[in-house]
Image (cartoon, rainbow, N blue to C red):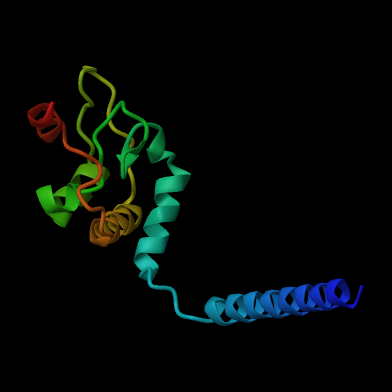
Length: 136
């Protein structure tokens, strides 16, 4: 009987200490500075507000009606992307439908978000179509 009581006390002691450690780490980490730049956070809000994920993908997740934008900032300059978002062209394959336009500030913030996304190590994800065709 004493052995099981000792085991129960040990279990409760370790449980309480673990929970206390979890709360301490959570409170400490909440006070740490955010590694995401302020303009990137604002750009993510633009991404969410305009529901860009319904057509575009990031890291292979999202809609497939338009391009994956995970690495778009390595392919195009920020000024080109901002101009594209402020004065959007007609979307393919439509003849009259334009990409939704953004104001200058929202476009700059969105480009900052896409630049931040580019810095996240993806280890080659998402696979590019030409690479996938070579491997199969």
